Amino acid sequence: MDGTKPVMESTTEENQEEREESKGCFECCIKCLGGVPYASLVATILCFSGVALFCGCGHVALTGTLTMLENHFSQITTDHATLTIVIQTMQYVIYGIASFFFVYGIILLAEGFYTTSAVKKELQSQFKTTVCGRCITATFVFLTYILGLAFLGIFGFSAIPVFLFYNMWTTCAAMKSPIANITDPDSICVDVRQYGIIPWNATPGKACGSTLGDICSTSEFYLSFHLYIVACAGAGATLIALLIYMMATTYNYAVLKFMSHGGRRSTKFSESY
Image (cartoon, rainbow, N blue to C red; front, side, top):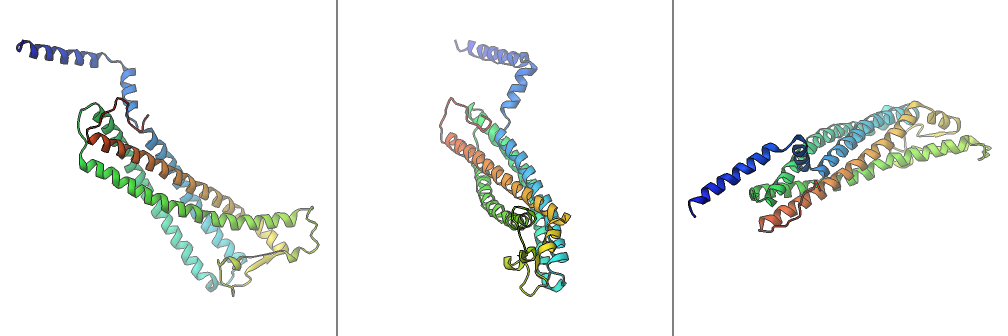
């Protein structure tokens, strides 16, 4: 009986090899697609798109805003010197955000591939995950959570210029509307000093009547307004991507930790399902 065991094992291995070789292209593709972390893939595409919109549109919108303020609301350079420094600093921060999220998105996608493959092989008892691997996954969960909170603040902050430009646009639209029946258009003004953008001693600091209408008709105002809207939408898309990342990495980490304690389930735990 003992002498037949090696023969039976070798025959089983040969049969498995023959079945693997007999698999067609379709079966191989299905097996490869089964290891794709679809949640991380969708989050990466959404993250790259959102960061590109936020950084690109935000950078151009800040430049247009500064040009509009210099031409119409603060014609003395010293009055808006602080604002110029703030805008330039924000543009440098945008460069950093774009570079960081490009690298971080690729790392998270690679970690998603690794974790999904580890979960599948763990379920098939092909190997055991290490403590180091689980710690790396937990670190990404924590970092993604912190970045999600940070981008929640960025998303709220990016809505402020949209609100300011929208108020200005509605004022111009109301002034041009025949239904409003405004007898004295010069009494309708927009004072940007009240928002704290420029100091109170800035001249002229406000625009009224026809001057305000001319400002709303400039390309700087029109382009900056719509770019701020797109930048805000991009920040929202990035926030959603970070939430997807966080859910996927948290789920995979929980499964790996469960399996490391000896748990075995027949269901395939993976973010690709």
